[in-house]
Image (tube, rainbow, N blue to C red; front, top):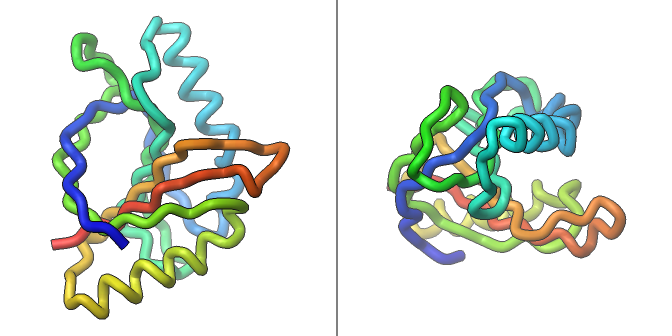
Length: 147
């Protein structure tokens, strides 16, 4: 686990309500929709895909807000642009298949609790490498908001 401060950034994205039980329906589909709209509006991707979770508590039935987006340059504005504030977080790198996210989340939350840190209710996943053909090649940074 590493503690870091992620600087404010702007993302072009789409926000939905979902649950951990149904989130799989949005994998690949929602990012492709966002990219298509970005291309139509001539926005350039400035970094890896990011998923921002607000209100997810680990319960598969709990509905929460999910923003799926891509960082963009600060010089253009659009209704699909969200300014993400500075974000203090505990981070860990997950390598491999996303079906094993639960183990990695369990590990980092255990370390957060052991160190007496408080959760903010926001977490992010930064998809540094996505490979649907060879899932073991996926590299995802999990960021858990802390106080």
